[in-house]
Image 1 (cartoon, one colour):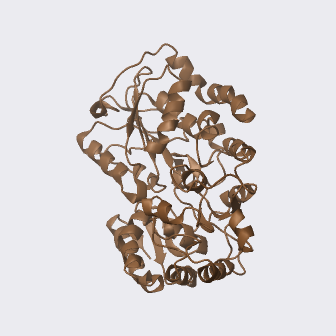
Image 2 (image 1 turned 120 degrees about the horizontal axis):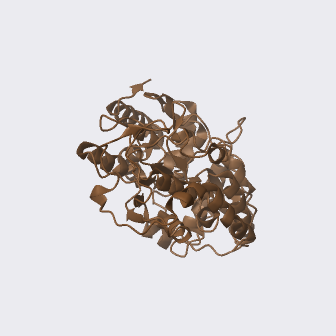
Image 3 (image 1 turned 90 degrees about the horizontal axis):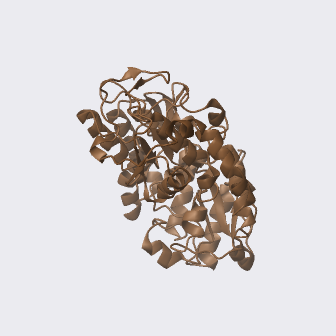
Length: 461
């Protein structure tokens, strides 16, 4: 294990959890049925954290919802803190805009009980609804920056990392990792073919056209996933998702910034170098193992796709990373593909334990540095994560482009209630499969976004 990891364990536990250890030192393991987790609002009073609080029980078990990948965070917490009773429930994490988190919470709001104490979501738009009053009494999400989470902890997250969690100046969630997009490339293939890593999107397209001619079967990207707009259109400053207020959005997919990204993809889709296949589909692994020349994508692609024995299994010493390409006359910016958010329930009967869990999951070296595959949103952990990754000897280049891209996420793409991923998957992915041009589809995409935004109560410009 990296020395920074070992040296940071005790500090993380003492710093973030000293209040929990004092309160729960002798707590036994309790069991709690899912239907009863969180309880109702009986006896709730407005507490020092700025929201109505249920009667607190420092020995109460907490129920934590995670997706399959974040079970490792729960395992790490339970190992570090066996004195805390934790019931782990796995669900899909609202992946690809399934909206399952919101749907389940709405059910609990109607019944007045059942809320999980902690929830992980893969989406960055959940704070927009979780901060709203759901059951006529209070919002699901607890306010975190009014004393529940130490200000010192909040202040050490990477600048801008908590923006998707912030509504009207209040922080309602903590980011798990930053999912800034970079340009992953196979250095061995570039050296073999005599290619130069593109610095601009024009060079990227030109290289894709050259690959189609000289090395058919190799690819430079994909458009088969619901986060395609976040990789290509967000980094082109396409005004498809400009959240201008709590319930206001500007949608204009007819801008030159949108059209240039669509036109580029049309060329690369037609010549076969950017297929309409999900990176998580078995077909992708079968067809493209050893054939990925380069691929724009989030930081977490490194562990989830490239250095994954269940996926591409790119050997050590081949995978390089470059900054996201720039458009002419502009500084390079990037989109953000997920990153994940952790919520504490305002209904929790054990806020201390719930807060301790999300603070551990987002800041502790035991998870963020030692286990997590993605670039941590918490600054001190991010530095150690980079050191650990580079010391592994796996990468063919240094990881500085990942760090730089983390500060280059374009602010013109917001985090509204509606899911851009769900809209893209429903509207655009089938049309691309049918052979339609992305440039021609831009008006349909705009209409779909506007319609969904209005359904969710937004004023659309």
